[in-house]
Image: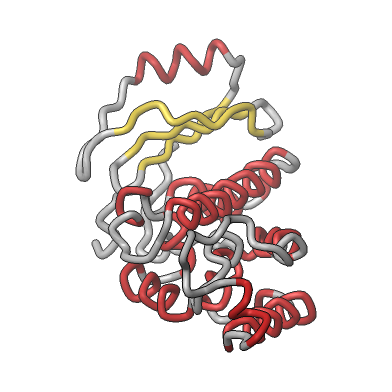
Length: 228
């Protein structure tokens, strides 16, 4: 069966992955990247006249650990993600610029590396941190689906598909292979097309279903033009 597309299916629910950031915060006591030679943001400046953002970072970490992700705005959560990659800078202007450009926390971490590189002030290390969070969210979603009946509810299937496919910049054709108890055997992206087209080969779908001994399949197709 083919999943119908709805207008409200483009928002990724990443709440389940926010808790991963707590572990990252424990490792932020020391910079993970050396400061460039001659930088004005030297250790001496931090010790003698501590920049205002150091206190902000400590307070933000404590608020996240005490109250959870629900107590933080999207730009603050982005700050937490980028602390390790950008250890000596006020990140609020950068995170607000990312949200203004891409729209939401989910859309920022789901943006392609090419588009993220266009943002002034966002280093390669910072982009890696964002893509790690995206990968972690996808891995969590896959683990949750593999641990339960995929079709126990229709909404759970839609939530899973939004997590792994939403905000893609090209159309893709994905197949979920199920056993007779509706457990997920495999989730495979069979084709990737252009911004408004992707090929589908029924023979390949049937062939793969037979190889996996699947008794049911769910065919999933996205539309990058989110406004339609």
